Length: 344
Ligand SMILES: [Zn+2]
Image 1 (cartoon, rainbow, N blue to C red):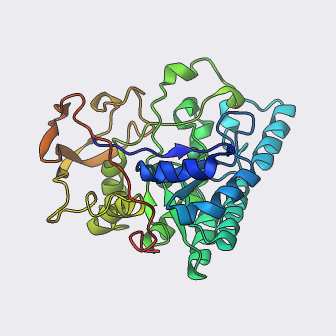
Image 2: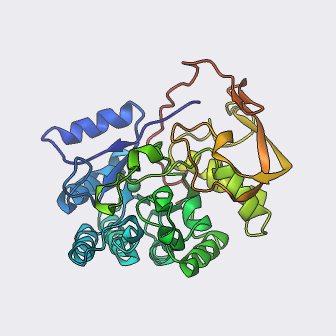
Image 3: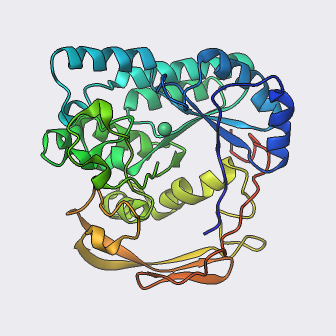
């Protein structure tokens, strides 16, 4: 497959302004900020984030935000730990929705005062999506992304013995929030659906029944289309064009790959996926190719199957097998972020 790169920015060294220009020039035009994980290499403090956004818009860089208020997440985790509630069933309780909404509100304010656009990755709550939608109506250039797991799974999974299959951040929310998130997707308040794919295996989590000691992340890139077709299109929540906009066209526009990726039209790469909408089956990890070796969706009844994937005119996947040659995938330099292309 072809690929692009998002940077993770954690601090700004003295040469950062020149570095930023060089980065955009090299075709890396989006960078992620983590508002949580303070004690790790991922975290960026508010000063770093705010300073970056003072320049990112003009430099053509889109700032992506993992939005969870670190103090709230830390405080809640400590409270649970003091009560001896450290098993995986408390993973969701340790990261309440208010933490996400607060960090989104902060990012929207930074966007408003700096004029730089902002993209919120993997939003899990209707509250956070509503904040973005309200800000957009006031002219703030903000984009909301969610993921299939927030639309298809809910936090009752954490009470199950196999809670290790559902550990991601932000965590799954309750069934009511899930229904409300679907409503927001349906009315167009979500512009993009990502997978937030991680290839961690269950073996990495074996015997660790402690939410403070597990690296979060679930596999999902291979099942995104299948699940959104089965539970979005066939459930009359989305049309097929909606689905393609959310999974393909909008991300290509937002991340500077349009008009090369994201559509079937003259001048675009011949990236084509042939989808058979008929076969129905119970989803099994055995049919998937991720090194994770499991799927949080195992056991769901799904409809449809990707029969062929073509990249730049070459068949790379057919009838359940990867047939592309190693090294075929090419780095795709992204154009500088363009609010018009992103329809902001
Ligand atoms: Zn993240």
